[in-house]
Image 1 (tube, helix red, strand yellow):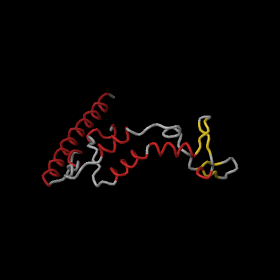
Image 2 (spheres, one colour):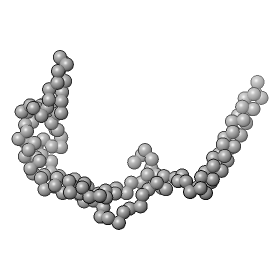
Image 3 (cartoon, one colour):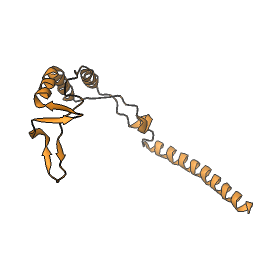
Image 4 (cartoon, helix red, strand yellow):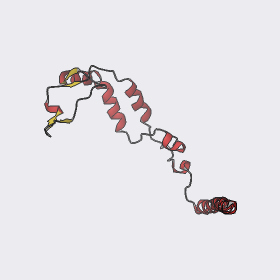
Length: 141
């Protein structure tokens, strides 16, 4: 009874070692052909043009919190129990978290951040937005 279990474990161990050796050999062949294997190989070198990412993030930090933004965005659309839709931008006000919000307050919030939003738009129009991400972290980024 013990012999089949031991044989199974030895077989699985041998397959694991053999698989690691085959994988290492295959990776060496691919690297010799010039293939990219590690995540670091896929990182594009930074371009010589001006990087707009630091300026955009700096401008985002300067955004002033208003009465409506950034906590209570206007709703795009809501469904009623009857299956009809209420189009949010056509309503003169909306209620969220027991607070009544009006378009005039949203307009005032946008006007107070007008210069900063223009700087963000200008930064986003630049051709380079390099964030220097560490891709070796995988899904933990």
